[in-house]
View (cartoon, one colour):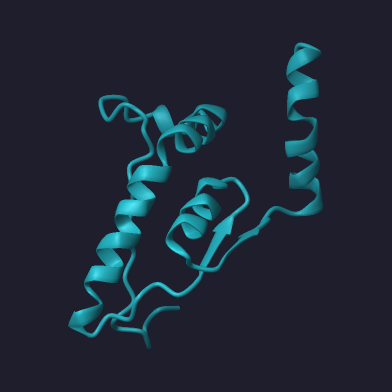
Length: 109
């Protein structure tokens, strides 16, 4: 899918989970909580890095489109003056899982 885009690249930020536990990312609630708590600073650092490489034929970040589970990206966009939007990528069934998650936990499921 990216064959015609030789300059496309992926960048990552740390998720805040212990690197010593290879299975830590399998606990989705813990992953989401960790990203929510620790994601803002590394994400802002990534944006700064990307925008400072714009002199090397890499355009600056002009818009941030993020998954709804990464709300910290909107805060970063606002702080840096970059337009940003959350995109809920889950289906209606997945959305209901988000909505009912706490209720299910409270009921012992």
